[in-house]
Length: 176
Image 1 (cartoon, rainbow, N blue to C red):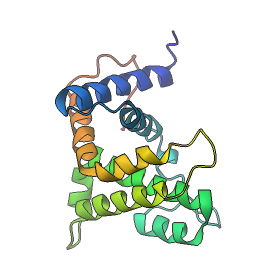
Image 2 (tube, rainbow, N blue to C red):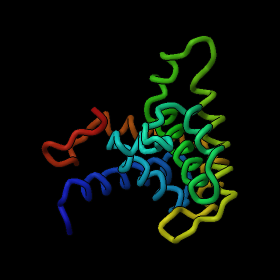
Image 3 (tube, rainbow, N blue to C red):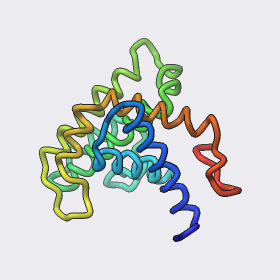
C-alpha cells in the first residue's frame, strides 16, 4: 500500500465522498462518487483548475471565456472543454460557494454557475469519448441531472475536512 501523498489524498477524499454521498445523501452510485473524488484530487492543483487555454496558449479564467472557446472547437476537444466547465463550476459552487456570492455584481453568480455547469455536462455527454480514459457519457448526464445535489455533497465534504484533517499525513494542506 502506497503512502505517497497523492495516494493518501485520493483515499482521504474517496472516504469523505463515499461517506457523504452514501450515508448522508443516500446516493449509491460508485461511478458518480469516483468522479467527484477525482475532481477534488485534480483541483487541488491550481494548474488543473485553469487548464483550458486559448489557441494562443493563454489560460482561460472565466466560464464565459471557456464557453466561447468550446464553441470554436469540434469533437473531443469540445467535449473536454464542456466537461471542464462542468467540473470548474461544480467545484466552485460546491466547495467554495461563498466565493461566488461575495463577488457578485448585481446577479447571482452561484445560480449562473449551477446553470452553466448543468448545461456544460449535458453538452459534453452528447459527444462520445474517444477513449476509455475519459469518463463515460452516463456519468456526465448524472452530473448534469444531479448538479445541485452534488454541490450540496461537496459542501458537506468540505465541512467534514474542515472539522478535522487528522487523517492526512503531516505537511499535506488542502486548498490553501
